[in-house]
Image (cartoon, rainbow, N blue to C red; front, side):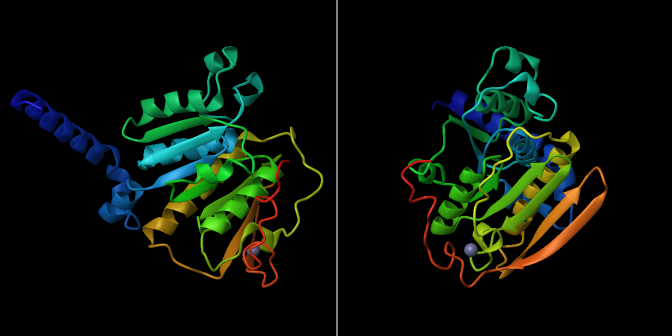
Length: 272
Ligand SMILES: [Zn+2]
């Protein structure tokens, strides 16, 4: 690099530093975040597991917050039926049937070019999920498939990766941080995967924003507060139509086959 190029690089870096200071000003003002919390956010590398409604909501919030890296994984293309609740997509994405992760990456890069976005079109299964966790600090659950969610639980417990479980059904939202190594896992609370899967049920758009907000908030708080360890968590269910809110404390099941017995039944399946 010659002197002229060096000077240009210095000017460019100074401009981006100034933009960052303005961009995150109101977030840094929060006593619970501050300069130190912002530094932590900007060091985080997150896998978002699914790029549907929850994936869009969480990816946008994390991108605006300024994380270092997002890995987006989804197998599907954008359809017209997605536009009612999947915030990152528009009519041109549905018309051209763009892969969801590609459409999301394009939109997110326009929101904050400083966040590195990796888009992976993939049908996730037991043979490839472990590769997706490479180099990430945590996972956001944004899948609507039960088998994938139990598989995610297996792989996160096996590798000690914190994650936040969340699901939306009709007008109700459910979420539960599973961030502590000594805390409960998904199978401590729901030991067996329900046989019946409810795909293509109705989804109330406002439930998406609420659930995504809680997932991202709980995950960022966990890192900003220095990864507090706890033997308990809280399962929260909110019905946005009825305006009801229920919280149930949950703790580790000493007989859990997954986090206690280390039997990773879903990860060890050859196929599903
Ligand atoms: Zn468990």
